[in-house]
Image (cartoon, rainbow, N blue to C red):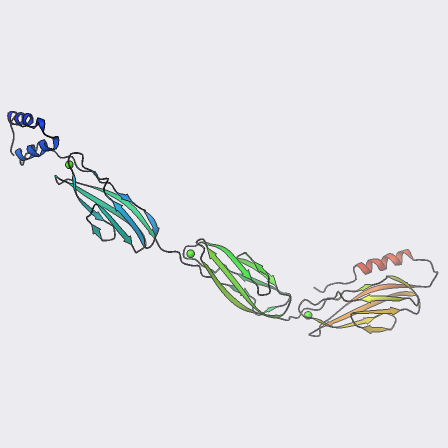
Length: 327
Ligand SMILES: [Ca+2]
Ligand SMILES: [Ca+2]
Ligand SMILES: [Ca+2]
C-alpha cells in the first residue's frame, strides 16, 4: 500500500490554494494513486416519472436529471424498466404493453466509479372489458296471468363491476333490478332484452324470445244492478261488463233471473211479474270453455207495500260482495 508523508500533503495543499476543490481532489488522486486514504462520496440517484399507473399501453417519460454527485459528477445513467429492457440516457421514454406491476430502476455512476440506484413502481392495468349479459327467463313458455321470473345474476364482468341492469319485457314495460318478476296480460311472442353496464360504462345487451300462451284460468264474473229493490213490473238493469279473464277472453254471458227467465249478453234488463226475492245468476264462459258464476239477490215488492229493512240491507250487502273469485 502506498503512503504519502504529511510534508508531501502539505505541499500539495499549499499549491492548490488557488485551485478548485475538485482540481485538488484530482491532483491528490493522481499523487496518491492506489492510496486507500482517498475517499469518494457516492452519487445520489433520482427518478422523475411522468406517470406511475395507467391502462396498457402505458407510456412513461423518465428523467434522471435530478441525480447528482456531492463530490464529483454523474457520468453514466442506466435504466432498467423491469420488463427486461433497458436504456442508458439521462432521459428516456418507455412503453409498457403488457399489464402488470413493474419496478423501474435507475443506476447512476459518478466519475470515480461509485454507483447508486433509485426505483419507482409502475402499475400497468389491462383495458376494461365489457360485461357479459346473461338473461334467465322462466317459465318459457309462460302463461298469461302467471308471474314470469327474470334473472340477470348470471351476468359477469372480468372486473366484477356491473353497476346497472335494465330489463325490457317487450310490451313497453321495464325494470332496473338484477332479478324481478313480471306478469303478461296478453298472449304473444315477446322479445325480452337485458342490458348490463359496468363501472367503466361498457355495456352488453342480450335478448330472449318468450312465448306467452293462454292458460287455463277461469274467467271472473262481476255483476251489478241498477237497483237492489224494484217494484213488480219495473225493469231492473243488470251489467256483467266488469267481468274479466286474466288469461283469455270471455266469449259468453248467460243470465238466469231466478224466475224462470233467462238472457244473454254482457248487460241485460228484466222486469219481474210478482213480488219476492230473486237470485240473479251470471255465468261467464271463456275462450277455452271454462265457466264461472256469481249471484246477487234482487227484491221485488208490491207497489205501496212496506219496506222490509232487513231484506233491503241483506240485498245491499249481497250487491257489494256480488262476485267471488275462484282461487
Ligand atoms: Ca462521487
Ligand atoms: Ca368491465
Ligand atoms: Ca281463461
